[in-house]
Image 1 (spheres, rainbow, N blue to C red):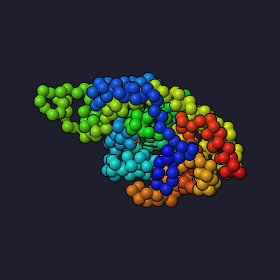
Image 2: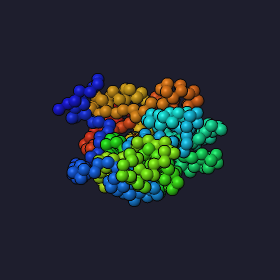
Image 3: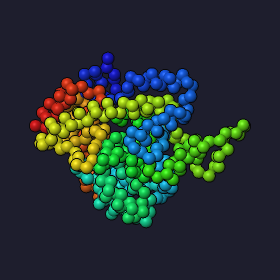
Image 4: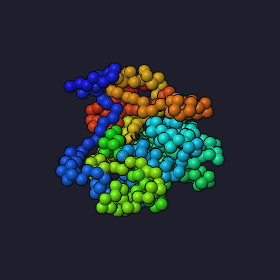
Length: 382
Ligand SMILES: Cc1ncc(COP(=O)(O)O)c(C=O)c1O
């Protein structure tokens, strides 16, 4: 069977760049949740948060409907609003920066480092003004940013740090899981992530005050765990109406999928790691292709596998003829007018925007397919 889609055909022979990891147990567990008829935020959502805290050593964790909601809730909780500036990276999926716009704030783009595509700490410091209210970083492709340097800048200028960790579940920085020590660390459980809940997000924080506030922000200004109901009133007794909140809570169907994902995380992560390490062993040192810099003190989770290549379109066309799809994860965000126009001082971003492409990496790839990809990537860059 093949599916017609836009200007290309997805056939069974085609090696796709991503897949969706759904363990067999998911259907069984979701069916149990459905039969229980408790599908709103409840015991499963709580179980998911507890499991996530245990697995990745988070101190506190809030579950939300998606990763974009996690970012926006974090900004709102910090009080980032109209006219405030947030220093951010332009080299990311647009959600990192649309969340800033949703709060009517202004993303101020720092440059990235060409060798790992992460925000450049030196470029952050230059862009701090009296209007700066927060720093936003993305652990691009699951390869952690220079956290120590960036935290130092945050401390020096008293600026909170939001980590967009949509790509970085299970990644480590200096032996700590991403999320263990962070102030506001936002994960995504969207369909192409290592594990998925269909759509979903988590905010890990080590700050108890932030945790209490986030619980309210994500549900109309009410802490669901302290909800006190009335006999006839439409809103709980403890609803004061003093905090404007969103409706970003995670329901129990979604949470059930997320729990199964956590239970199978090691299996999913291992598959990616084996493929990623093979790519790194086989493709390093070749002409016309450059792998990402992985730092000795960090463990990336291989969420995606970006590389720099010469003549990206020729490379993609060659591989497409061998039934291998490669794609671009994102363009530099400032090409989109909503972000306020193209910046002229982002040298590494401009370079990466022309030559980064992702090789397929996901749990459904077979060894034969990985062999096929490696063979043809080598031919494509000869
Ligand atoms: C870097 C980054 N940030 C944020 C998001 C948004 O996550 P979600 O789709 O769960 O809203 C994504 C989604 O893929 C992402 O890649």
